[in-house]
Length: 305
Length: 305
Image (cartoon, one colour):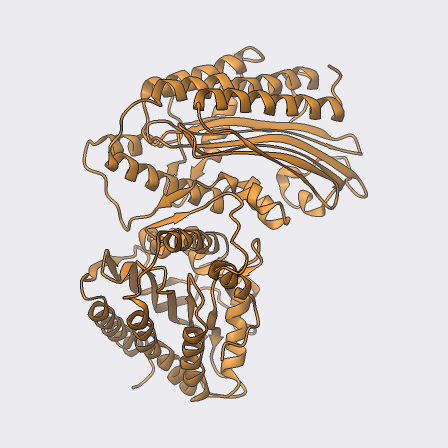
């Protein structure tokens, strides 16, 4: 396909469709509800939310494509500045698919995926995205499977991508005030255009493969774990881990901050928060318990493969 | 009493004692657990946490007194800068009592109180504090009682204080991304030293009265509402309101941000978060329901008296 706004938009909507179908099929009970919304300044989105399923307690697969005058604040942060190209009086176009799934069972991991495309009328354009996993209990076998899937996607395009983007995810999904990673990470990348390895078209193909890797990877993890029995104590632990998830998203997550500060559609922005979460004062895990072992593995730089 | 570090510290610890006794007595079941902690750079605190009571689900009455080299970041924010006095190579001392109480019943309001004293070795000193109420359901009679109590404390010292500090609370306890106040407000003030109305000693007396107003005011609200029966739907609404409380504290609250960014004692900093909270995608209240009426009153500038 020719890489332009219209085709990218179509491709993303089609991806959203396919992912929703795959998740509904594995869940077996709940169906996504769709809402179409428009943004006053330009563009809009197609939100799909699923609740109270067999496997999924709350999940969203959100598509959006927005445009307008490039806001100044995009250029306050160093990471958004594009050297040599002025953004004065430019317009922008941004489109993407964002996913968060909170499962019912503490034995099924939370997953997050996002792929996004950004361009300005001055010719600047970039790709961003990633997939990362937040197991309530870390199962080494599942962690290895998950990271292997991502590594395969990366390796198909360039051998430097998995180590680089894996480290990026470790650094990004870090709850600094807890000194814990949010989960076992995954891959994360931003402002990908052309680089010393691949041209833009090749990076675009990589980006598409990331999007397409989501459904088979997560469905496999749902399928493997969804029927396992769990205890009330495990459910309580899940609620505490969800508390950490809330802490990360409200305190650190750039997408959430961006949405809150720019009058984004609040229900879409905060869709990532779980149905319920818990905080117990000074909660301590029992020595050598599965909870303690999980905590001990929430570190940067673990080689899961 | 002579106003100095030692006496203020003693007075605050005594206030903490009295408040804990009053809350335990009205709760009738749970007892505060105490933890003493020290801070590497200087000072420490006495945390008191109560959980799983008859009336209180989770609450903290936290005393701290910390000191050390004045950190630069205190002077990055305009509000902390003190004109004309250099903070270079100064030391600081800060002490206060902070309270958050999350009740079991949705018919008993959440309350927050904080009073704090700050001084530097260059002679700068100020007082700050406030009390504010977050009812899950707004009851006009209780709101009037609460604000009248605060107005009485203020009026005893200066007639300008209640309107000024009430507006300050409205502005501060505002969840901007929801366009809702966190509750019915109360009073809030900061950097109080001497002003056109009162000298420092007189403001100190006001500040002490704010601290002493907490226990009788909240105990009256606990007592009036603690035995009322509530439904599961009301409990669910409470969890959603607690979700808003979490949003405010993690996204906007300066004390929380300060704690997270300065490697504060995390369990104390996040003590304000409820045992559990909930988020439902795009939740809508029923027209003219008590929930809808409460939402409609979460506005700035309401005259509750």
